[in-house]
Length: 206
Image (cartoon, rainbow, N blue to C red):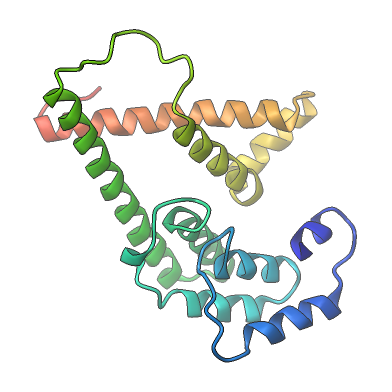
């Protein structure tokens, strides 16, 4: 809420920020670590609101959580946490944050590969019983993930922010820009998966 008020031009409300920081320091608080539901999201908001010391302290507290206990989602899992750590690595010029973000990215990639391998093995075992044809409904979970990544990149990724600025000057709406980013990310993901599968088979994926 405080972040939304700030970016919408409705003020910073320092007394409410002080209240939030006070609550965070109360003992016995079991705070989630996610970007949309916990510590990493609050840390991002605190940095934007001009409280960098408290933001870094909260990120350091959240780093103590075992990543194996978390899911891979952007909302409360490793994807959102990794993106926030990468953002703080740039802000603080911190190799430690960048290394942690790289480790999280490797974990998410491993989970995705395991999931795809399991799905492929299941489809093979059932002899691809699903009728051939286009899936016009799409994969809603994948679409939500791509949409979330696009939103985060539009806010935090410098090159993406520059791209968004150019497209806005061309008259594109944020929805249209986000759709373009999702197509770009989908192509990148597809190429990565094809190359990863080709590498396992010992062939050239290009």
